[in-house]
Length: 171
Image (cartoon, rainbow, N blue to C red):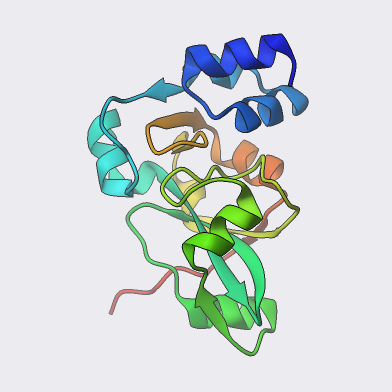
């Protein structure tokens, strides 16, 4: 990591690996807009309360295992992922929530701080269309204490995500 990236990460509170990913994508301006909170923002509700935004303006980065292969699902904070819909989209036999070890091994980050991109390994990414309902969404910046704002279309593009409908439908 370059000295500049390390300094940017320290100042913003973003995880150094995530700061480096932003720089590599030409998005270092997002580091200046990254917000660090003294209390953890591990859940979408905690993040929305700390930021002062709607729950649906939070982008959750959730790791699932589709037939044992990790897949990242980006979902708005007010919604739940319908694993059956994920299974159908992927053509998988079985989809389950990945455990903490798989999440860390795949992304390089702990649950509650997983950003939408800048991961240790290349993983298939699905982004729920509900994220596009907002001008800006907030996502984890690699730690449970940091978030950054990003336009949803930019988020989907930089995450290399397929835009899908995998949110649970309310009756």
